[in-house]
Length: 416
Ligand SMILES: *Cc1c(COP(=O)(O)O)cnc(C)c1O
Image (cartoon, rainbow, N blue to C red; front, side, top):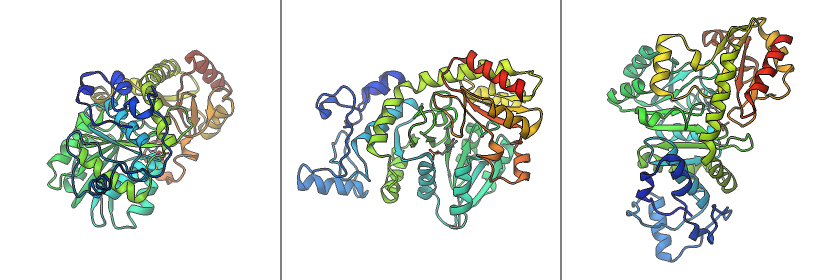
């Protein structure tokens, strides 16, 4: 079970903290790694402790420093959620608190339902993850919230959209954008939000680069949001979502909504996620090195119109943003093939090591054709505007040997 916040945990570096803080073996019969607590309900130590736990859960009082509060019921919280939350905090620079959800979409929708009400507005960058786009158009806008889209990477347009929005509650940034990898200046958007009289929160979908290569909270954002299904989970075998923030009060509000919606990460998945956290930095570093070697080796290939990857950016503004907010280029790149959709499909058909599947961030390489799959709900006009052509293939690089992957991609291009 999670022990009260240990201040000394901040004196060690993240790879150490993720293995040492927040878990007390004495509360798991001495087990060196956390046990799984599947119980749906918890026995109170006394009627007074039950009264106290409910008072805190309902927000009527605050726990005192170091106070140990009884658990109540697993939809509110459970030991494996608390352990995973405590362990993910040191991975995100500037973080103080976290909340786990049963998918990335559960995390994102809980952010909206907690901080935006009917009659309020929010600004978001496009292109956006397909599920988030659906949430906005099919649920939030019909409920009376106003979504204001702005093109990813367009700093002046984002600043203007923020400054001119009324009743503004949230700015949602996805950077880099999927699948074009266009980057948005998180520090500049956060500064614009701070100047707005409504003081909207800034949330960054950090799924592509975090928590290893990009730290939105350190750049001024309020919340860093994850599909833990991707790099955090890392093995394409679980769904999960995480929100991490600087202000524990914001996370307490998110947990309150989570208790109502019932979308907390379940104990078994929380235990799995917790076990994957100590290796996320190792996996992502290997994936980024692999991707960089392969992407750079493919530049100039006669069958390719373009290789899209952060280390290959040429636009000075994109180079500036990349250098200011990403420590490494990451594990995802896209290619544009000569010969359009037919060539792209032939390329996919010839893959043996890499799998033709959506999703990303797993230890195995996954390749997809966004225009006909993940982005197929976009109109022709939107696809063209955001650069998601039918010649584009997105590649999420795993931890296989990069030379095997490069050989496979070269052979597939020869046939395409
Ligand atoms: C996958 C993904 C999501 C949604 O996460 P789920 O775990 O599938 O619900 C949100 N944002 C980005 C950038 C993603 O890649």
